[in-house]
Length: 245
Image (tube, rainbow, N blue to C red; front, side):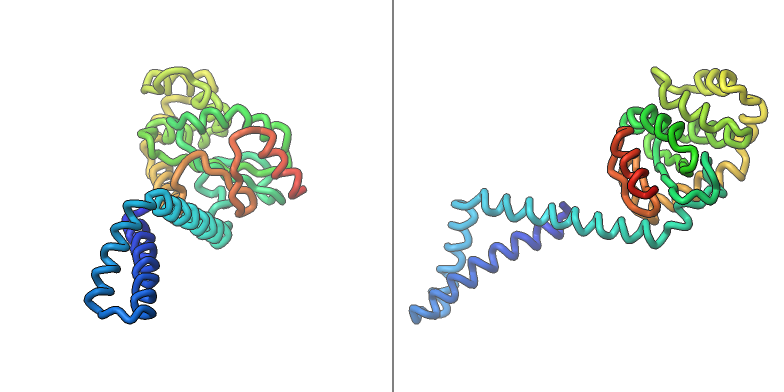
């Protein structure tokens, strides 16, 4: 929770105590000065004697803030669904006009993304009528890998390279990138040129801007037909697809 929200909650707690004391003082006919002194003491006593109440108020405020953030993000997804589902600057598999579209924002250096990838591959293979759009972000220093994957996409080899990068053990340095591209049947010389092309750079830049626009704050982020999909395992993803079929 940010600083402003913490202050707001504390002010609310203090105001509540102050109002109660002031009301009691008014009923008892006490002077303004006496009531003020009582309020100060009451506030101090309350905060000292009820730390759990303050903590509970802060937790509740944090929960409310998260709920509001989730609502805001869901609205952002809906308002930007065309851009999210757009595959003109993003690798994708499946029919262009599919009834169901799943978008993944991910980072090649993200442990949870690597955990999701094998399950996501199973879902892809089991649902040929679903479009899967891949939008790599580079929060974790994965720009060279993302560029390589986008370059592989230019040769129709994205999915093979995506899977290989996600299941690779150890750091993905330049040698590993070259090895993975080669094993996937990619023309490495052409891929390396494409990695530095304006097309690839602009595509990754557009994806990064979109991720900020729809408030992607963590990866992997899955979106199905413009709705948040909270899952990193095959079962829940398949279940979400089945509900839309």
